Length: 347
Image (cartoon, rainbow, N blue to C red; front, side):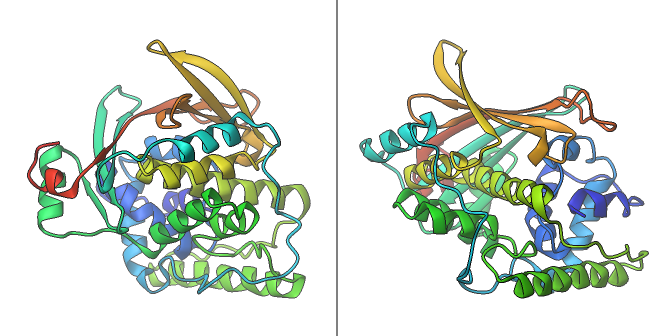
């Protein structure tokens, strides 16, 4: 079960804003006990009218478990799920170039995303990630400035964890960073745990899901067995992809975060890298196979080939899926800024 499955069961609610959905998404990952185990980005575009505010309500009810289930560090132990970066991967090469480049001025990463909904309406959203770990958001430069001036820091423990995992990868400890990124929301899948500990972690997560439904007065879904084999591998890679790209879409203009995300994406076997051209710029395409996205779609992340900054994120329906997702796209514009300029409304 993932957050989209939960939201389908919570439909009698008014329409939310895209910003409200994004704030609720991270909270739901832990409240659900199993973060992002199916295609999220394609479905969320088409769930705004009814499902999104249900997510906000569920996140509020489940506040006690928001992004805190994992506890401290990642437990030691056998980790057959770990993988090394692909030797010679263009992503590893680009990560090295990003780390070696001269530091840009500023004390924060600004990412402006433009989301195109099925009716072709566009939703612009501003996310500011400061070098001190604060996160400010708004749907315009002015509302972002207002958020900064109110000191409305919306960073969650989840944000700190994904950013720390990215930095850990950038600084060379890719194997441990991979585990940390996979388990940033929780460790329901038991990555890095003994078999007995993994089963307990899964059972605890299922119990949290049941409690969330009970608190909402909804029918409690039947518990599901912990996945194994290829299904487990696909879900682990799904969590890695989703958590790492979340870090990128918030902290893209932070070179250390960006380099670490590139290193981590290079460890996913079901990811392929190609080249394209975007408005005259050389770009890399990073394609996530439908197998790690619930089978309903593939995701294509396009990055500037010279600096690794995200340009767009697309979802393409899987033609053989019984419930294929619809096409969706987000465009990104990332830059280094100063918090003072944002507060003054001069970005």
